[in-house]
Length: 161
Image (cartoon, rainbow, N blue to C red; front, side, top):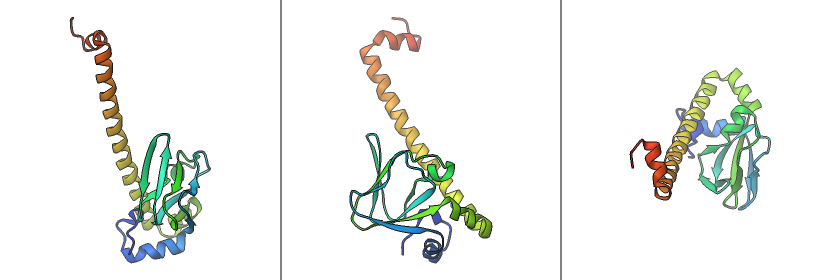
C-alpha cells in the first residue's frame, strides 16, 4: 500500500479513499512536462507511481511515490516556480485542486487540518534544506573572497594588517 506523505497521521486505508474521492489523476511518460515554470498552479501534486523531477535553473530534485509537491502554488495561487518533468514512463500524478480542498475544509475539517499541517511540515523541511544550502554557499563565497582579497577580509573582520 502506498504511504502518502500528505496524509501522514491518517489510517493508511484512508489514503486510497482520499485519492479516489478528492483528486484527479493523470499519467505521464518519461520526459513529459507535468508543469512549466510560470504555469498557473492551483493543484497540489501527489506522485502515485513513477517519479518526477523539479528543475529550477541548475537545481534538480526528484520526487518518488508518496511524495507531494507544488505546495507553493497550491497555497498562494501564484504561478508555478519550477518546471516539473516525469522521469519514468507510466508516472501517475494525483492533482488535489484548491476547489477540492475547499470541499474537504467544509465537509471534513479534521482532514483539512491534517493536510495543512503536513504541508507546513514539508515546507519547513524544504526551507531548512534551502537555508543549509545557502549557508554552505555563503561560506564558500566568503572563503573565495577572502583568498582573492585578503585586505577586504581584514577590513570586514576588523583585523589590523
